[in-house]
Image 1 (cartoon, helix red, strand yellow):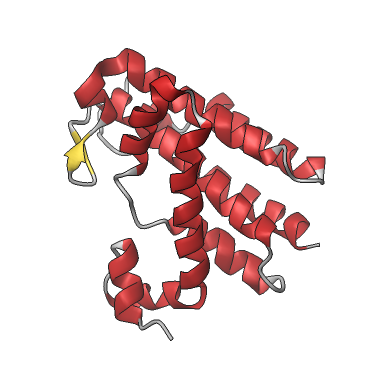
Image 2: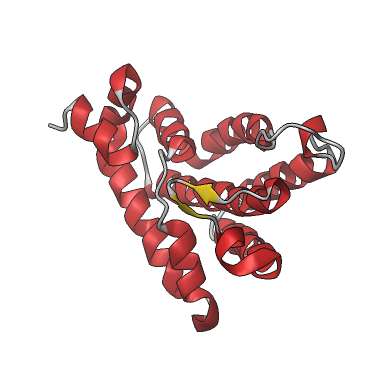
Length: 193
């Protein structure tokens, strides 16, 4: 059995929140392996940049929500893990793009893609991560899942939050997560059926 402390250490979450990871720690580890394995799916010219973007780790809160929600609807199946990977790839793409908008120098204790390689490569990398995630979503037999994922992504950009607009003055991250949280719950019900 995995302790709360090992779960917290594995995903950078300490304290009581670390215990939330425990029921799905094995699946989260599998999601991490699947995310890392995605590097090989990219053009060889981009593999190193993709690996760098993946290498920052993170808490994996979105995959955690996907897996916990999927578990709440019944047994976790491979589709839940696939969805967790897709959601994390899209989140990573938004982080790469957000770092451009914010002119961020560091994320997760390492230089951002933008700080290392500039805007052009960062835009390209964020775009290919989005495209790859959407492509992965087409592997579900139920096409409504990929449509819901595409619509959630489109909604986040068609109706941006005020802090995403050019005149924003704060350095806060875009609020795409609210859209994703709602759509994620809908998709999980379909995956579980």
